[in-house]
Structures are given as C-alpha cells and as structure tokens.
Image 1 (tube, rainbow, N blue to C red):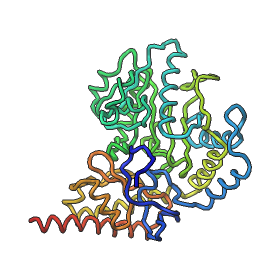
Image 2 (image 1 turned 45 degrees about the vertical axis):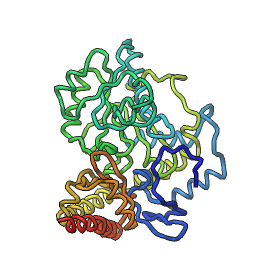
Image 3 (image 1 turned 90 degrees about the vertical axis):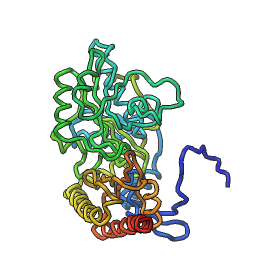
Image 4 (image 1 turned 180 degrees about the horizontal axis):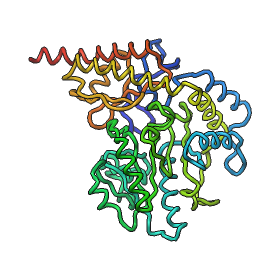
Length: 396
C-alpha cells in the first residue's frame, strides 16, 4: 500500500486500537507493554479516567477561542505551575520545540530590554536535542538533523558537556544564555552531574547570563521529582516543558522568572492554538494526579526498583547490556548490539522501547506502572537479550 503521508518516519509495522494503563492493544487484540509512553508523553498511561473525564467534559463546552480572550483554565494551570516551581510567569504552546523557541526568544529579549541587543548568542551542549524547527535544530547542533536545510540559524555555540575550558572560551560579550537538558534524552540518556548543573548556575550568575533548562522530556515527574533540575538544588531562569504535561494531548509551556521575561510585552510573541481550553483542561487534570501526595515518591521507588532489576539483567547478559543510565523512570540501556535490532527483538516480545543516540534504548514507561508490570517488562527484556546471546553462542 502506498501511503499519502510524507515519508519522514520509519514506522514499526504496528497499529494500535486502544490503550489501557501501561498497555496498548492492536486491532487484532494483541497486547503490548508500553515502555515508550509515546516518547515520555503518556505519563499517566493510556485512557486514564481522570484525563478522559476532563477532556470530554471540556469538549462538550468549548474547544477554542484564541488568545484574544481570557481562558480561565489557562489562568488556573499557569498559577499552579508557578506555585509548584521557581517561575513567576508561564507561556502555553503546543509542543516542546515551541516551548524552546519561546525560551530562546525570552533570553534574547531579556538582554535587548536591558539595552544590550548584541547579547543574543546561546551556548548549548554537544548531544543535545531541542526540537525540529530551524532555530531549535541549530540549538541542538546535531549535523544529521541540520544537513540539507540551508544555512544553520545563527546564534548558537555548542561545547561538550563538562568541558569547562571550552565553555569559558565560548562565553563572550554576545552571549545571552546557557541552555541544557538535565538528562539528554535523544542524545543517549546522558545525565548531567548535579555538581555540574550547580557550576553552570554559578557561571551564569557570574557572567550575567540566563540559565535555560530544557525539561521537555525530563519534566512532570519523569525522574521522581516534578522537574529533574530539582535534584541538583538549583533553579533556572527559564524552563521549557512539554510531553508529560499534557498526558498525550499536545501541550507545551515555557516558564520563567518575571525578571527573565521582562522583555516579553504585548505583541512580542504569540500562538493561535497554545493554551486552548481542551489542552488546559487536560493539563490541569495531569497536575491533579502528579501533585497528589505520594505520587512522585512512588515514581522514584518504581524507578529504583526497575534500575535494580535491570542491573541483574545486565549481569546475566553483559555482552548485550553494557550500562544502565538515567534517573527515575527515564532509563537507558547502553547496548553491545545495535539498538534498533534490540528494539525490534523487544517488540517481538510485545514490549515497546525507544532507540536513542549512543546506541541506547530508552525505557520511558508510564509513571503509574506497578511492580507486576516492571517484572513483566524485565521478563520480556530478558527474552530479547537471550536471543542475542543465543546468536553469539552459535557464532562462537
């Protein structure tokens, strides 16, 4: 069959009819344990009754008005995010890339509003992924994504994470901000040490720079804290959020201190769909669950349990699984076999995992998984790893 869709994805030969918690079900009734969660999006699993109820209730009222009018659900969600974080103000959009575009514009406008429009450059870190727009591709700096789309958008300087001499050399009179993911997701579930994040905060303060935290993949409970930077004890000036905040409904947000956002006055930025009533209803429903007492502690415990069981699996299959990375329920397996082959083998065992850079497969299950589902996932990972071990044994 010839598809009418632009062929920009290599899709697995699977289509799902419905979801139930941490499970997806095909039209033929086959059940798959979902440890990808739509790339860290379905944080509360599939068909969560509270989210379904909030969406359907709002859908029967009003879907869209535009930001020419007040949207009470957005005012409420914004205030709840401010109350739970470092931020004073929130801008709602539809995706992580849009949230990062807003973060970049806020950082540049901050300096322009302070009489230094020449300070527009942003230092980012090798292996980063900040989105697919032309500006966020340039921010990420990965050539494989930039190639063929003309000149790279000006204003971004990449340095290796942890290379302090390179960072010092990259900071100049035109530098506006540093932008970093506390754990690089697409880059291979690479954790930035907490001490390094604290040092970056100090560098920003010493040089009059803003610190932008990209928490598109790490945020909304994924690591066992509401946002991953909290583990380091520092706060950013600007933070981008998406994926988990909508629980599967397209929703992004850019949070900032009032000082960092001083240049963002009426007319400086906008969106047609961002902050629409449907998205706001779902976003508030997500926070209802994630901010419940004990929820984040359960995520942290589940992450620790999964990591312990993965360590035992690595010990049984050291030639297949070489390293375990990550925090909470954002974990990665560094493999000794091609990650796409391993993901296919896991899929054959009816377990969904997500390949990433540095020959990693990501484990990003819904935050609501229980011990039985963790045990079942490890059993299916064992089946996938055993297949590679059998092939290696036959070759020897």
